[in-house]
Image (cartoon, rainbow, N blue to C red; front, top):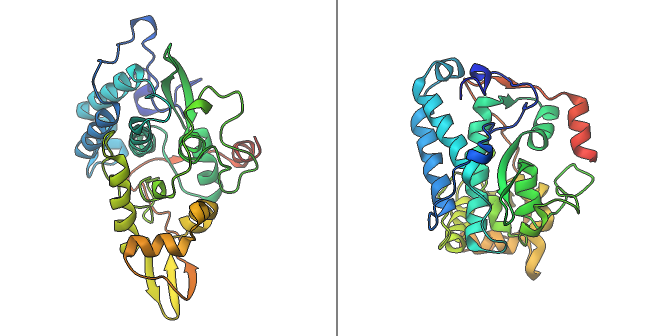
Length: 292
């Protein structure tokens, strides 16, 4: 696995790919009955145990890290997307996003400018099995969030939908669920906290996540003459107007009180990734992702 990742550096032809191992014909088969969302949740917990307090250089020299990265790659090489429309699929996609962004920050680096952040979520990709034959295909973080979890809506500051009409992932696109915004964590300080999501309990778990987030300082808070809410609710404003209720209605329901008066948006703190290398995508790469 060290050779595949170049000892922690970039591998020609696989730049920005997060899980780079390809078992090919020798690929392990996913064990029948093993819950895919639970497996990724366990991997996410283990990631925190392995990386806590360690910078990039220390991880690069750690056998424990390389053993973890080998396990992550083996699991991702074997797993396929759960059936379209299933509760397992929604839980799996949330866990896939929250786990893989953490791994990507180590193997690809962290974007630290506005331009690079805009490009990062298009450029960095995870490979996963799709369809009955389990063909391995790459999907970006924007593809997971906006293509699969938001009903293939256009990402903020983009011109087109995240998934093309010919994408093999399109049949797995789920109806937009505003509560997902309280579950996804892109690594920034202003992101909602990471929770665990299960196939059998994902809907009530999202209810809890939404309520916890908007009751906390990072989701919604009172200010003189009204309220301030997370900038996420501005970027994805259309998601919070679905279902015949307003953003204020949804925040109020989560908090258990009426949200009245002027509503403003909090400044977003993108700080993250201390001790990690810096990812530089450049302006041209970002433009290609935005207009594709």
